[in-house]
Length: 433
Ligand SMILES: Cc1cc2nc3c(=O)[nH]c(=O)nc-3n(C[C@H](O)[C@H](O)[C@H](O)COP(=O)(O)OP(=O)(O)OC[C@H]3O[C@@H](n4cnc5c(N)ncnc54)[C@H](O)[C@@H]3O)c2cc1C
Image (tube, rainbow, N blue to C red; front, side, top):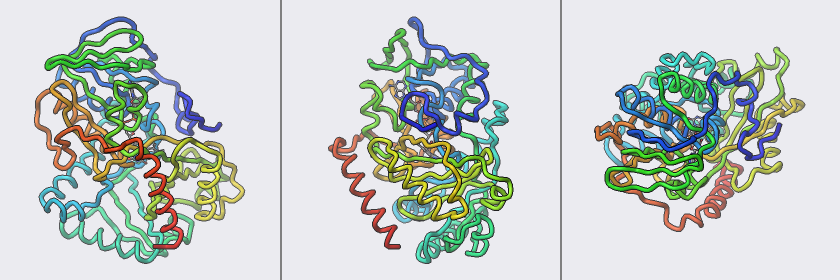
């Protein structure tokens, strides 16, 4: 059941997904539409819905199937946050900006909940159970508490609760952490079911979604974009590029991938656990993560424990999954004999300023990407903002607004540079700094 990077990865999410209620359809012939969306992950699907609701013709194209990218592979934590802290935003850009960003992130969670309810995606199992961030040492705990107090006092956020060491230990069934902060507004979702449910609902509303349809070339004039794919040509007044960390798949979108630092993150899932063991772990049924630079996350689903983490670069390997399993067992020694039944990984769009980017590329194109590992909620809300931007509205974008397409200089060197950074961060984590 191992993930091998092939089109249909064998993630736990794919194994437990109910049969699709919609048919997979490829582009077969030329079409004309108002807006073409490239990418059928949360960004592209949320953008398409925002347009359909306004009565605008829209078509979605994906090189693979719905949710094949990060949207079908992620940990399913629906988080009201960006990678950059609100406190850092306030000190760098002022309090009003931090407040606007705080609002956007919390709207992200509300958007996921609203979309799931509007599209009746009960199989996404959305629960607003919260997310517990666990401190891996005393210094990290002090920083977590200071950040939570600042956010509560300055942004009037009453959704954060500090847990002491005993509370964290009692809830998660591991004594390795020094305490934590619960974000009560967060939730969990079954990620692939969410993406597929959005797609099925869009099709019911008349939005065509063409799968296994890689866009190989995009020609743009001031008023039109022409998208070329093996099955035909799509002519549109606007194109929304929603390819996030998978833009490298074809020439047409590869320069958008260069706005981000290439990072991959992996996940493993245990076999179904005996009920007594299962019930003794992660009792809050939330999403969990920790404060190490090479952050690990964990949660429960389908009677199993899932454990994932950053720090995997280059090609998937048995070695990296073995490292993840070692980290799982050192956090939860009770799982030493639990078999690992699923291993998979996916690309994460990391940006230099640790914030998502939404912007125009000429008159006919809008791109929206770079969620830095917090994309379930952010892509759902920002996809809608991308749609608004594409049709000339002025959505509140705050710090996510990208003024111009700014690819990372010497992008080819970004992978080796990221590898070096990752090994340095792993070293700092290991020595407790
Ligand atoms: C293992 C993992 C765990 C994660 N955990 C979490 C988490 O717990 N919480 C959280 O908030 N975020 C998490 N993330 C991040 C989150 O999944 C992403 O930010 C989010 O799914 C991005 O959605 P998207 O629609 O922008 O991109 P994607 O879902 O990646 O979709 C992009 C799509 O574009 C298509 N595409 C690319 N190029 C072309 C082309 N030229 N033509 C046609 N189609 C093309 C691809 O086939 C793909 O389907 C995680 C990511 C990974 C990989």
